[in-house]
Length: 234
Image (cartoon, rainbow, N blue to C red; front, side, top):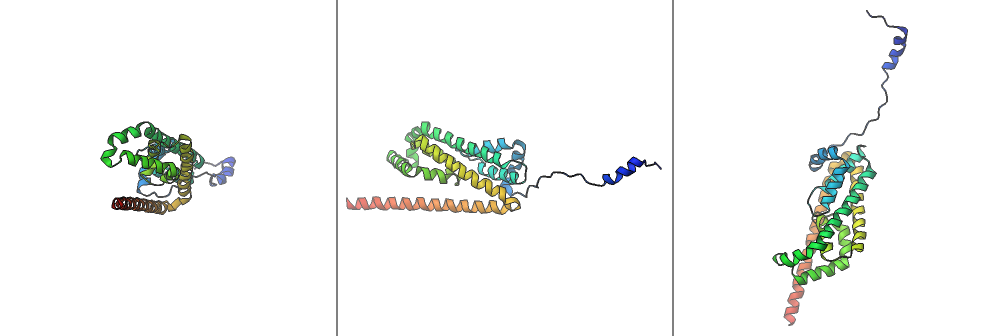
């Protein structure tokens, strides 16, 4: 039997005392789309957030909004810094919309004049679109961030219709702050409820799309009725 010395005997009680450790909160179970992006975000971190958010706001249908929510969830679990996530996402969202604006400004009108007639976008309709955007463009840009399809194209539309750059930048920045702030807060606070929060967000986004579709139908019907009334008078 090996003898135990006085110093070893004195130290042995300390060996049973666990050392304090700083542990990160466990990442909650993620729904399908978030789980699919998790390895990409884990590997590339803030770069993944910046790249996908930028492309999502620059006319490409990539999961920028999804990676923003996921990054906020990671921040809630202590794996990313929330302030850094918000900063990167806001800058990327603003830059993405600016790229879309430049595409519309320097190429959109040429495409409309060349191919617009194939989708019913004639010269007079482009003039009407420009008038509408002159009056309501700021509100459109602000709300568009929350609607798939419009988030990717609102910058192009603003550039094509000739929205002034300074006015565009004001609404672009405001929309980016609102969009990033809303989704990063939701993801950060959701915690283990992220699955339910994500499904609720998708449902309300569907409601917004339906409301937009109904609005467009109503505007179309009103236009047809007015045209019919003008023809009847003549």
